[in-house]
Amino acid sequence: MAEKVLKAGITRKAGWLYYLDRNLNVFRAKMVRGGEKKGRGQKPELVLKSGLSRDDNYLYYVDKAGDIARVKASRGGSAKKGKGKKAAAAKKAAAKKKLLAKKKAHAKAKALAKKKKVAEKRALKKKLAAEKRAAKKRKALEKRSKAKAKKASKKRATKRVGKKRAAKKAKKSKAAKGARKTKRKAVKRRTAARKTVRRARKAKKAA
Image 1 (spheres, rainbow, N blue to C red):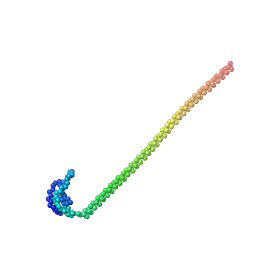
Image 2: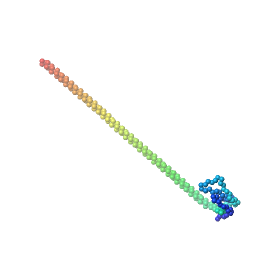
Image 3: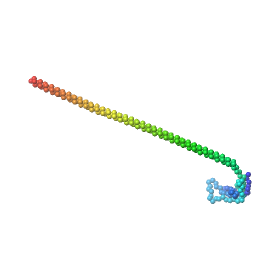
Image 4: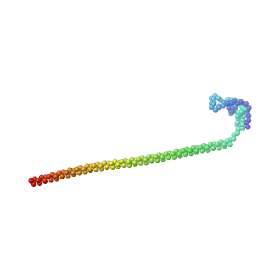
């Protein structure tokens, strides 16, 4: 229950905040609304010197009528303390939980990144192996193709040599045939000459 200490009868004006200082003197200060800026030279104004002394078991304030009133101060130390402790413990537990969740998420992200890296490495290794195999295959095909071409070239060369040899042989054979024919003709001419000589001798003897 509020208790009036001093009937001051202060008339409140709009836009001002009325309060008591440590010595229970009434002061007022200009209120700053949202978006307004406080002036540099604006200081609280003394409205009334009460001359009262403060009792620590009471809370003092300026009531609606502009009088100084007081109410019994409710300490509630132990209950408040217990409540505060509970709140602090809950806050601490929540913070711990948050930190654990954060750590877990970080560890998960790290594991995923590692997994991704391993997968990328494996894929790269696979790709390189495939490229190596393809290169080896190409090389083998090129080698086979070159060997085939070489074989075909050798075959053609052998064929050309065979043809040349055959032509040479044919030429030789033709030449030999011609020589033999000429020889036979010469033999025939010699035989005919001899026959003529014999006939002439026979004719001479008969005469």
